[in-house]
Image (cartoon, rainbow, N blue to C red; front, side, top):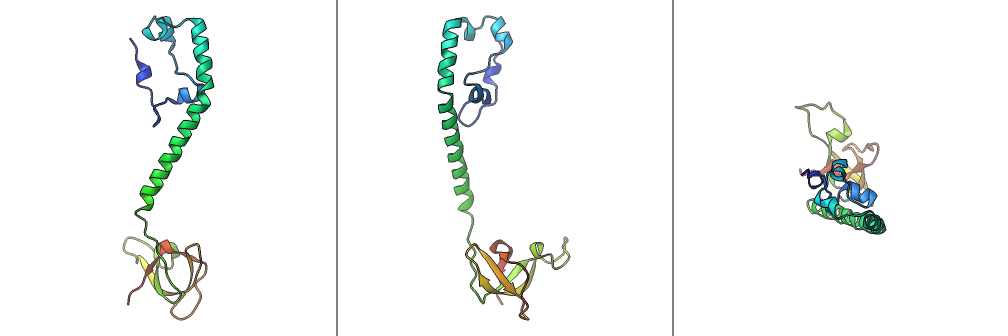
Length: 153
């Protein structure tokens, strides 16, 4: 007996992509030709009735699957966000800029990782900062806190 329906890929909600699309499980032509247990007890009338019932609950299955996906995404987001530490700098603090973001000096294996120090002149609400050099010259564009590190001297 061929049991390919057991080895089809299933989603996290224990449904196959075929059943989420068409509302019923797929049948191989071989299963219809060979009298298997799966098709032996099916008659045409009952099969049509089962198909209508499956189509009626298809939207409910899809909705349940969608809610499961949303819950999974929230759990993944929570797991990721618990490791993130917010960086906040105050006006007047000295920071180093990541050389990868500023590209002020040539990068490479032995190139410097950080550049600076720079002074924070303005702190925006969305985590971006306006910087100036030690000489007082404004550095172009705003800088995200991910690309800055507190400078201790």
